[in-house]
Image 1: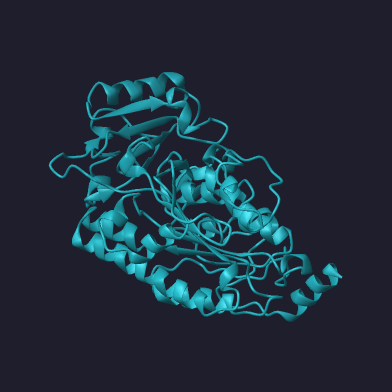
Image 2: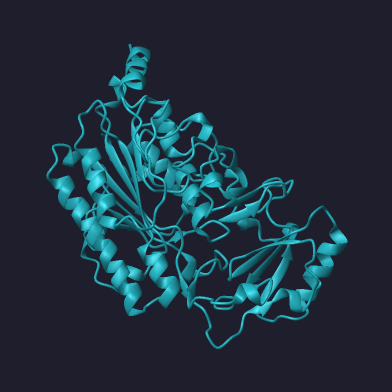
Length: 420
């Protein structure tokens, strides 16, 4: 019966612009999935753990009061958007899911991943692990995304039922309205997992710095989006079955505006090397293994710069989980908090007053985690969690089995749920 339903759905449902039909669920919830809870996973890019204390965020405060809040959420290394979103979605460190940055070369240097290139973003070969939406689709559960890292690619050969190619010009309220439209669908086709993503806070804080009026306005604007989402959910017959989990990929910090960025090619020759600049860090890839060259470059930087440190991959902190097998850079140049580093003076042009990418131990890099739903306690504050700890909770809410190894604590957050 289930195979027949999938075949019918594949033949009847039409492929629409900006979305794709999943082969996992076939666009139809299997009968044993239809009474499962509904989960909305919301990402607010760049929302530092303490930003709600700086702005007027009644909706985020309401969710925390009616659910759980972690004191902070510690990002994975590097503290960038793409690896952290995908770690939240898979429960894996980048070393194990292979999305090791916003931009990076393949291990053989023949290809290059870039968040700005739709072709690479939608190429499933870059993504390892099993994200929550693929796990759901594989169990016959319909999923939908109005953005989230990884949702544009048919990972493991399984696209989401509904997805959109990222477009920053799409208003936040348009994304909310579409989510509510999905939630109002009939039970056989209604998504049980919906992801939403808002870049407003990250964009404003990069441009104007944390604590600026523009940054605070962006925080309050996103809080308003989520208020509209909750209001819409309250009007639905499934309101009592909906969980809302809100995460951020990393925090934000102000750069030291009176300190000029350190320029690497002023002190060492970078000819033939690939350097990926992120401002707070620079990742240097050698064309082939050359320990002597790596040490020459590292030493030249460290002898010239007191506000950061160049480290060979093998010398990176163990908690960063940066392995050769995963393709991490041969040399990581990590700036001290507030300082910046670039490969060339040209790439240092137009640096922004707010940034991220500093070490994951720096508290300003820590993000936010709050969640509410029928089986979660109310008003409980828990100690800091890791980004990889979120995935087991998502799977438990959806009542799906974890079938592949993960790095997150499988019991930490699920233990907070009461019996159904």
